[in-house]
Amino acid sequence: MKSLIIFSAFVFALGFITTLEAKQNNLYVGDYFYTELAPYGRWIEIDYGVVVWKPTVMQVSWLPYRMGRWIWTYDGWYWDSYEPFGYITYHYGRWFYDDYYGWLWYPDYEWAPAWVEWRYSNNHIGWAPLHPYATFSISFGIRFTQVYNTPYHHWHFVKFNYFCDPYPYNYYVAPTHRYRVYQTTRYRTNYRYYNGRVQNRGVDINYVRVRSNQEIRRRDIIRVRDKRELSRNGDKNKIRTLDLKRDELVRNDLKRMDIQRDNRRTKLDHTKIDVGRKDRTRTTVKKDRNVKLNKRNDVKITRDNKKQTVRKEVRNKDVQRKDVKRNDNVNVKKNRNKNTVNRNDVNKRINDQKKTIKKRTNTQTNKSIRTDTNKKRFEPKVNKQKTQIKKDNRTKKNKRTQVNVNRNKTNKKTNVTRNHPPVKRKETRVNKNERKVQTNRTMVKDKNRERRKR
Image 1 (cartoon, rainbow, N blue to C red):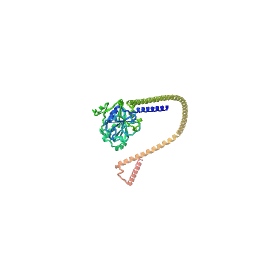
Image 2: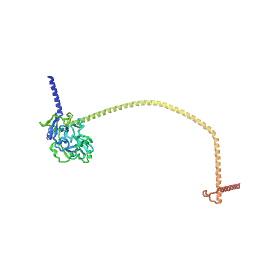
Image 3: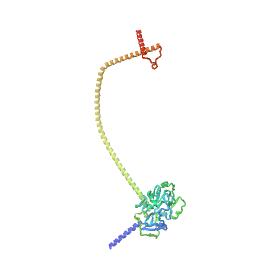
């Protein structure tokens, strides 16, 4: 009996724990979403406490984010839907495809211009709805709690020329060519939190402008709290969107909701879905921000501690260096005293060497003087002989000069007496015989003159 009681208590505790976990992860929808979307679809409970919405769309090829257009705003790429339920389902929550139910909308209470993921290339740009596994946080942006790749047939692709067209669904790539375009594109998501809002930057606006050759202007967003004010579009440069607080969306004052309960479950792992939970609120976003700030402060504290430790180490090193310098100075002084003693010895040795060198030089000079005196004894005779030779040479030169002078005088006299013009060697050619006669005559004349003088 006791064992049965213990077993029943154990089962009750397990059931209570599971219900608590389910309530923590539940998606009991608020009355605002329920009342606004009930006319356009039906609500289904796919798991305990997990409620989703299925649109009543008759087209087989229908996809989320199909009927509408893209507008560039301060918060990024905004999806302006043409469908009556688009002001909720394309700015809150996530979409996923179930093999049995089709497309289902998973509620969430955080607003964004559009919850999509992007792919792009040089020619095409595409978008697809984010899966419920994709959650948003301040520190990471979009992160997936479980690995998930959206298949290529869930994407919309269009050329850049028609991306900002009012009716881009007329230019979508055909389903037969989606796979080829999908392979040539790159994946991108760029979500951030700024000024209390989620921004969907997606593909860079400058890149879109260049590839489309269009001037895309930015439009302002007007946030409205009443559905009736959405249709009042007086200014074309402004867009109206519904942005309510979480408390208003989560509140459920309805006592009865027509929710279809089915035993068939989806393939979603609800334990790994963070979307739609109560802790995923703007207040928790503030908490995340505080956590981030605390992390930064911790990092700063650690940096400061590291700096302090480094400073202490530097100080210790400086002290050690000073001590080493002091010891070095003491050793240097000792070495200097030793060096002074050694220098005195060295100076003595140098002086001794100098003395020896002087003695050697003196002896050498004495020897050289002796040799010089011996030389002087024999020099006068040699000099006398040299002077006589010089005199003889001079007399010979003088005789030669006198002879030449006499010859010149004789030649002048002969030229004057006969009055013959000077003969040019080049013009006159004299025979050898004539030359001999002339020489003989001159010789005879010279002899006669010498005889007369005598």
